[in-house]
Image (cartoon, rainbow, N blue to C red; front, side, top):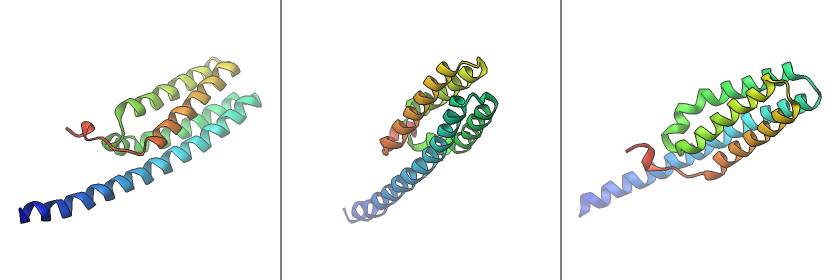
Length: 127
């Protein structure tokens, strides 16, 4: 019984600490990406599709850099939704359709916000 109590005393704070670190990383990544995507939306509205593509690529690279870490704790469906939204926004820009690009960048911002507001972790991603 004493070993179980000691084990719990070690494991629970460790999991809590990892959860807090995960929330901080998720918040930082989604905030940085959302800021860049909003810049891309401004450029789309101004008709600068080349600048918007560069901004969207910068946001995608930032997200891709942290994706393996996010996949450890965050639900894969939420991360896949963000990846799909990046792809759709990129398609809208490549078609040079402002309406489509704005619609998909809004969906991307929503997916990033959803990922940030989950703030939980799931052992289903580990086991």
